[in-house]
Every structure is written in C-alpha cells, then in structure tokens.
Length: 274
Image 1 (cartoon, helix red, strand yellow):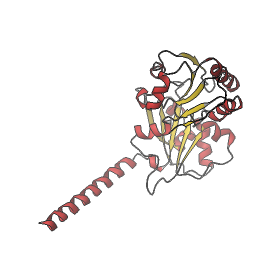
Image 2 (tube, rainbow, N blue to C red):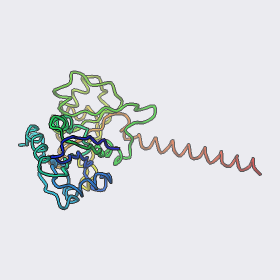
Image 3 (spheres, rainbow, N blue to C red):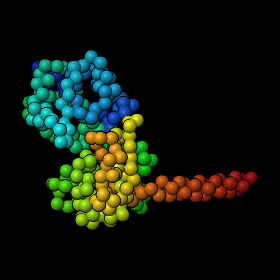
Image 4 (tube, rainbow, N blue to C red):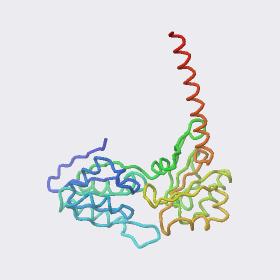
C-alpha cells in the first residue's frame, strides 16, 4: 500500500511519485494508472516509454530526464520544478522509471516537499531487477544457492564504494559505462572469475536483449559483448550462481523428480483407501 502524507497547506496541490516500471506499459500497477489518468502535469524521467505517458491523456508532460554522460537537468532544478508545479496544479505526478525508491533520488525530492509543507504520495513500481529475473525465468533468490540480493549502481562499484557487501546475488544498474572496470573490481574484491553474469537491456520491451557471460570475459574483453546491445541502451547486470545457464535445467530436473515422487504418494494413498 502506498503511503500518503498530509499537509496543512491548502494552497498547494498534491504530488504523487509514481513508479513507471521497467518499460512495458502492462507492468504498471492499477494505482499508478489511476494516478496518471487524474494528473494535471507529469514530470517524467528519460526512460519512461511513450505508451506510459499516453495514459495521462489530459496532463501537461514535461521531461526532466537525466541520462548518464549526456546533458541533463540538474537535480536542484528538478526539485524546484516539483515545488512550483504543486503551487500551480492540483494533481502533480513525478513519474520515474522502475521503482521510485531504487536509485531515483527520491529522498531529495520528498525532502524538498516536506520543507515546503506539500503533501505527497509514494506509489511503488516494478524495479528492473525483478523484471529482468522474470524475463529470464530465473529467481533472484534460490534455496541453498542465493539467500541474499544486493542492488548497486555501476558508479558505486567503480567510484564510491571501498568494498562490496557480502551477498549471493548482485544486481548492477547502469552498468554500460566502465563495464571492464566493474567486472575487474568485483574480481579484485573476491568474486570468482567464473561467476555467471547475465547482461540485459531494454527489460520487458520488445527490443529486450540479454547475453550470458562471466566476470572474467567482461574484465578482459568487454567490447565484443557490449557491442551486441542497442547503442546507448542502459545495461543491467545479474551476477551470481542463481543466474548460471544450468540453473534452469537443474530446477526443471528437480521439479520433475518432485512431481514423480508426489504421484507415487498419491497412488499409494489411493491403494490404501481401497
């Protein structure tokens, strides 16, 4: 359930932070859909798909997108626009890709609203990690293989963090730039060179692409791998044994065994009742 804040300021509108999901319009939540349909103005990020924006039929639509390595609006200006929009419109939607709380600088935006006594609502969306795992038919966690998951950004691994958390599955967002350095950093900090990696772009869209690799392949010769993807498409990394190529076949084998065992139990139970 989303959390609503209240305000004593009756001269301003209400701001809804809406998660647009990974891309495909049919992965929006019902609450997000209703919010877009009621919006007077939508301030949207760069990766939000046109099909999602079209749901806000009567709203003014303003791009405030930020893209790595490209000219982008400053976060300070985005915050100012949210506040000014709330002073002009009743229903303001701040539309972010994926889930609003995952690498979306949500804290800065809700802080400025709190300072200005403007009410807001947070509506979660499906983050790319969940959508990518679903698309690959692989779980983010797997019994006896992956009991923990950590979400990081590529910049965090190459610039900000002295050491990575101890985790079974690792998901790296925005991992296209400095791919070589990301893989080398993970190996340097203890990850096996043969650790499975699935690189995936345009998650949930018809243009989705994914490539199976390993940390050592990316660390030593990343360009042939990166060149397989659409130019400038954001790249998500799923790292760990849960994403091994053999993982799915193992699961299928185990399921077949479990099904057979269950059938034998049913047959025994039927014979007992006769």
